[in-house]
Every structure is written in structure tokens, then in C-alpha cells.
Length: 375
Ligand code: MG
Ligand code: ZN
Image: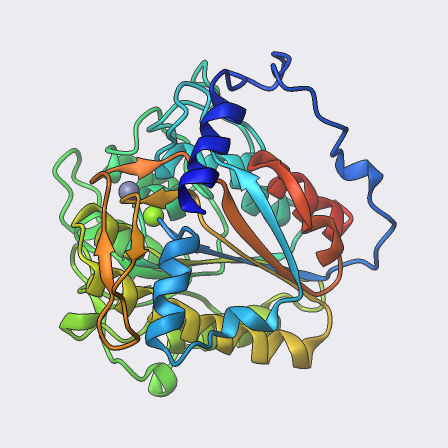
């Protein structure tokens, strides 16, 4: 079956469109978002990205979790096409920029177009509408995925420039690693940790796994550094994504003053397990992400006005679970230590969720989220 899928993928994408203006070789019926029925407005949008989380990463996590995942609570499922403007195999910067800005761009680009022009992100557009905004990640907060929602830089490696871009926004909450890019910078003398405090942020680097006793001031914005550089893998003791997801939803709801919020939550290290060709790394990160999905869904079901989207930027590792596997022992294989071209599942819940069924470009996730919010 997998071989057939791969063959189909190769046939379909053998001559993939380099950009959206080029006609695809295989003509398909229109899948425009405008074909979808009118939907009730979503006040809040929570976009959850499992970096490198393809179907097999999900499947492996599910098998090891007694065949169940919180992802099964979503009734609307679709697929997106993850290729970037310059490569059939996207990286996380181009992948996240597609979600954040609705533009296909080159691998490595952070919130800029193929000609390196800045383009507004959905987070910035929500800020402009006086909504609350937040970013949560289990990588550094300046890593490609969160960066693409708040920064505009020609290269994902410009971590200190990306950190400085955080100060140009009014983001209400961010939680992730990478404190050193803020307070011990090599490219200038600025101390962005202190600048955040002066800008009326409650800033903390007090790493506590149970975030319930954080004494933040609800009137201030909130910046929380979970590590100096990359946070640990779950298997080495990291355990904040679930707590951070709960804190972020409640905090942003209170901060939004009824105007709604946009929140991106990333399970960053599923991808790193794929790059390392380490099935256990993938599975432990996948289940940590799924636990946070459960926390978000519990909150969204009560809230009733929130659209929740769970997806990935791309698959990593060409991961497969093979003959001879049992629930206890999976027989796994990898075809690469980089990303693959596989289409990526999209799970949707809440007002506007119907728009996310079917097959569409990764850039349409941006359009659909905005349409759901009436922006
Ligand atoms: Mg990432
Ligand atoms: Zn990767």
C-alpha cells in the first residue's frame, strides 16, 4: 500500500507546479476555499504544528499509546501539499511561512517572499485588529517554525535578528527556549530580556515543569524562557508543553478582552527524532504533542468559539513501520535523514473546521484561518 502511495505521489508530483501561477500538469477540479459553505465565525484560532509529523509519526505514536490518540477527537481531516517555492521538499521555515503568510517561499525564508520582501503574518494581522497573540514551542522561540509567525528575515539562521523582531511586535505571550539570543547577544550590545521587561512584559526563566505556580501578572504580557538554547527532549526530562498549552489558552482568553486571539503551539522535536532516525525520539515527542492537543481540545470544547487546527509542516525521515512489528516492538525504517515530499494531514475542530477537509496547498491554511475569523 505504501509503495502504491509513493508511486502515486511521484506520478502526481513528477512535474509539480513551481509556484501557484504555473498550471499543474495534472488538471484537477477547483478546490478554492470559496466553494465551501458559509460558516460561523471563530473568535480564537489555535494552530498546532507537529514539526516533521507525517502519517507514520502519528501512527507510531498511536500504536505505542494503546492504539488511541487525542487526534481522534477531530472529525474533519484534510491533506495539504507542503512543497516550497524552490524545492519539492520544503524546510520548516518555508513551511511555517506558508501557514503564517499564505505565500510559498524558498527554503530558509522567515516571513519573506521569494524576492525577500517582508509579508505580514497572521499573528501581525491579528495584533493589528487588537486581538491577543501567542507562540509556544519546544525548540528555541527563534527557531524556524515560531520565527515565521513573528519575524521577517532572509535566513532562518539569523537567530539574533529574529529575536530582535519580537520587540517590534505586541505579542502577548511566548514560551520556548533560546534565552541566550535575547540576553547574551554576539551581534550587538542589546539585552532584549531587559528590553522586554521595560516594555511591560513579565519575563521569567524560572523553569518549572508544572507551570501552575508561575506568579505572572495577568495585566502584563508574558515571556517565558524554558531553556538557554534548545529545550531538552521529552525523554531527557522536558515536560512543559502540556502546562504551557493550558497557561497560554487561559492567559490569552483573559488578555484578549473579548476580541479573540491567535495562538501557535509547536511540538518542535518530532522533526528532530526524524532527522536522528530515532523512532523512540519521534514517538515520545509525538505523544507529548498529543497530550497537549488533549489539553487544547478540552479547553476549546468548553470555549465553543475556538477553531483548532493540528497539522505539520512536512514529514521527516521517510519513516515507516514494517512487517514484524508488534505493539511492544515496532520494526521501523527510515529512507532519509531529511524531510520528504509526502502530503500532510490537517485536523480541524470548531467554527470553520469544514473548510479544512479535502486536498489543498499549505498556503490555503492561512486563507482558511483568516476566513474562519472573518479577517
Ligand atoms: Mg520547527
Ligand atoms: Zn527538519
